[in-house]
Image (cartoon, rainbow, N blue to C red; front, top):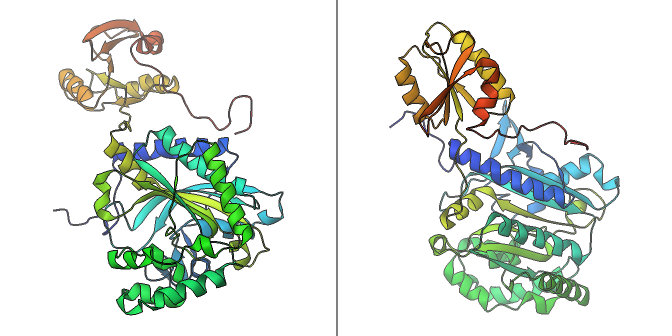
Amino acid sequence: MPQYQAPRGMRDLLPAEATAFARLEAVIAARAARYGYLPIESPTVEDREVFARTAGEASDAAGKEMYDVSLHGEGGLALRPEATAAVTRVYLQHGMHRAPQPVRLYCAERMYRGQRPQLLRYREFRQWDLECFGAPEAAADIEIIAFTSGLLAELGLVDVRLKVNTIGDEASRPRVKEALTAYFAKYESELDAACRERLRTSVLRIFDCKVEHDREIAAGAPKVRDLLGEEDTAHFASVLEGIERLGIAYEVDDTLVRGFDYYTRTVFEHILTDPAFARAGEIAVAGGGRYDGLVRTMGGPQIPGTGVAGGLDVLYEALKQQGVDLGGAPAADVYVLSGDPADAADRLQLAEPLRDAGFNVAIDYSTRPLDRQLESAVKHGARVAVIRGTEEARGGNVIVRDLTKKEQRVTRLAAAVTEVGRHVARRPRPTLAAPGGEG
């Protein structure tokens, strides 16, 4: 066993996985752009209070699961456990609340929680996130849900179902808290220690408990929907009507809440349904909702918000389980070889025009016999070999050998790009700006 390994609950992404994650991020980012969401990034390390103040003291992510960070003995910092509070801090710090609203922001970043590692739950995990500030209308919630449902369909994920609920706004919260506290207090001795603490600090989050007996107790609790005011009820009715008109299948789950105290009104999750994941309880591939008081909680004005976050690790594993082709790491299509052990610089000169033309090219710098170099090129997945340093490949000529068809042709060095293009497609090259428009 190697002396050093990745820390518990964290993992390495090898080339095929890293490539698949990059492709997933590219699809999500492109969809976010089509919906008008602008990309941002925030630091991995934030002021601890960004999360402790917003998530609620009963939140595991802002409590016992938080990774605290210190610098020269000075603390007060933490690794980011979730995106919404961090994005809200960016929104306020940089004056985006004074810009024309709504402001739509997108990010895909790593998060950290000291949770117990288990199926699809890591201590370092990758997450994509959309946040829409300044839109109080139910239509904003509908669009966020439609974005997520459409994204999962676009990626080919079908083993998933949408759950929605409403937990009411801040005005309804005292009435909800009073009714639920009275109910759960009757079962306090039967609740596990975590839920007894939630009964004191954030009674709604008892619904989020994973202990089966506690969930059975929660199933008999008063429905939050029945405790809400007219505005909350109308907002939720508009959300349901909207997703129905868009043809999005859903179910209302009266016990659905989210893991942070800042949520208000609409909450939703896209839950994996494949039996392979059922043994770990319900696993959400994405979830979100409305948070109309979050900006004010962080010291800003009263600005509503709604958003969604999804786990890239969960999404990757779910797609793989379902058999979706995620592709492998792109191998070099072309290998440059030579029978002359002394022409390393010539091999580089040959490779550069091919790379500039859009081919993935690797060079065999070894002094091994040519047949061994050809074997290596095949093992590395190359489809074409361009060969120098042989009797045929002299005087400005090279050999272009198709390693699949096992046929070759001698061509002038100046025509190598054209000849390689007969066997291998050129790969598009990213640019700093899109042609005819802004980047």
